[in-house]
Length: 291
Image (cartoon, rainbow, N blue to C red; front, side, top):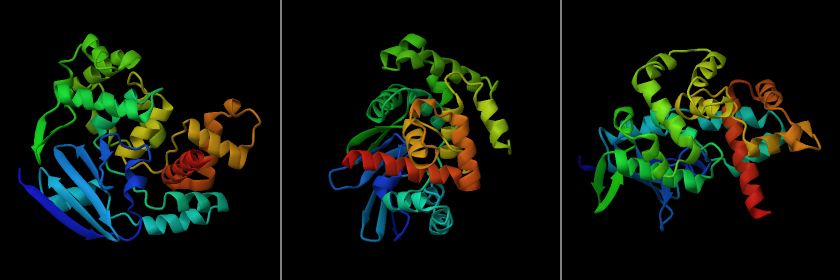
């Protein structure tokens, strides 16, 4: 594969820290010059933004223009989405200011499933290290600019890992879950192609919950970050905190029911709940950093 370069003018709704540091992906790393380099599918890309010009450069398995258009969802009008969500209330309008450059990536379903099983009770730096170790051990090596990168392993390749092998890579209690999920997907007992044909998000969540290590929150992350189900609303500690502070106002945050939060999100944000969640999540986390 040869190196390819693509330059696009993307003034609005495309800010690198907002996209890559909002918790939706784990294989993008910030470089010294402020750009980000990442691996997705069989592609290694560096993305840099200077003023309104975004430069995509790297090795792609296909045409870089089409690959970037799909992966970064460049055909979706986020400016219009922000206009709609800004009218919901002042809280959401304020949160959008913090993460106005967020875009939901179109990530690979298989990789997203395994990545978010690994994310359970984990922090982002550790998740990234685990995924990198798995990729180095069972993925395919790509050399670009003298550096080694590794693709995320296929189900077939990852099935070579025993529970003990996965534990050695640092998965902890998640080792058995990843091991069992890999086999369910490889045997097509859980068929990824059929999953993508399910129209109803509640029904899809139930199917995803059949995978070891997948509960409602992980299922919603999988649906939002790899299946474009913008109507789902993943609830983690940050989202519960912000929804309680803004709307529910329970003195004991731990007693706030996740179902109550999802119902509130559906009522307020409708079929854009997932994108609203990203703005709220990023806002609360960034606000906490500066507190």
